[in-house]
Length: 198
Image (cartoon, rainbow, N blue to C red; front, side, top):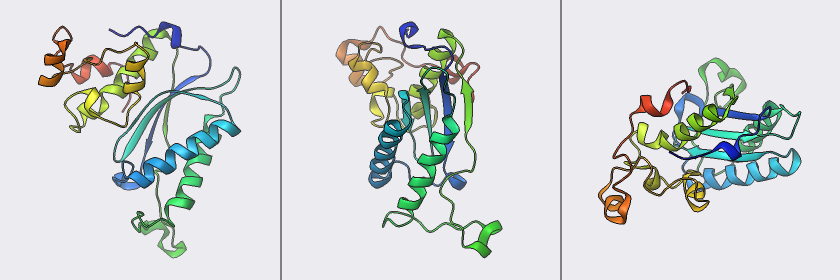
């Protein structure tokens, strides 16, 4: 079990779920990934925060951010990222034209769901549950067999830092050959996501 106690920062750590409009599966597109990465870094320069964990899936992402002490303005940050992404994405060759029926008169093309889900992380246990939820999410959605197989996840950074073992929650033959047989062959979604939102 990973030990995250030294990574939890009381008072300013938040878990987020951000979803594309009508679950359009474009977030893993190379252009979308590059643009999102660039905008997150630019946002961190303007309004600092630490990205503790993130997983990017085709139609949504999960992230844990830690904001500076006394700062809880995550809505400003997400609002800016989503707005800037939308402006640039809709002019790219990769963008699919999307127009909502309710806003057809205004020729409004949506990219993101209007709102996002937020949870304030309140303890080390809460932090661990959300970290594990994030890194198990590609398996939950059938996109990978093991966390190490999904490339767009902070799991790999945490492995490099020695917090996760490469074989955490792994069930593949490659990991067993690499000496990870002592780790669970699989973890149930309920084990990982107890008290964690979608």
